[in-house]
Image 1 (cartoon, rainbow, N blue to C red):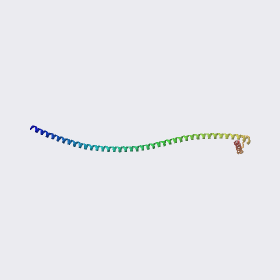
Image 2: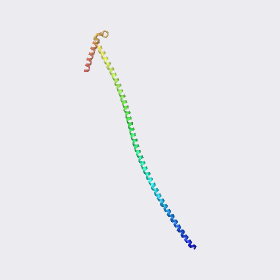
Image 3: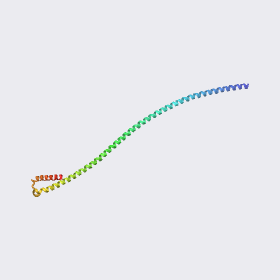
Image 4: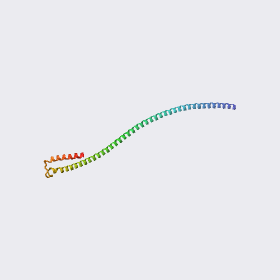
Length: 176
């Protein structure tokens, strides 16, 4: 009896053990399925978040690139404008300097011409005085024997005669 009951007990325990094992495997299978579903859900959620993050990153990158392009264009415009202003200022300064140099050169030429004109005027005046002196020396003896005996009432007539003589003399020189 001990053997039959032991055999029954053993079968019962094995059946219970198989049932328990089946129940554990079923629970484990359900747990695995549940974990797999949760893992799949988390993977989808992670993939969705990752895709959302990629889209936001791409959008932000596009916005930053667009902003950078706008800022670069504005900077380029500002630099071109500054360069244009600098060139204009430089050109204006150069023109002023050239105008000053030109004005200085003109002033030097004017001074030289004025000095030449003064020298020519002085030379012509000296030549005219010499001619007048020479003409007077030729005419005065015929007016009355020298300066001491000069009749001042006849002086205008004598000077008119001297002027006419000089004109004739100069006209002859100009023709000759």
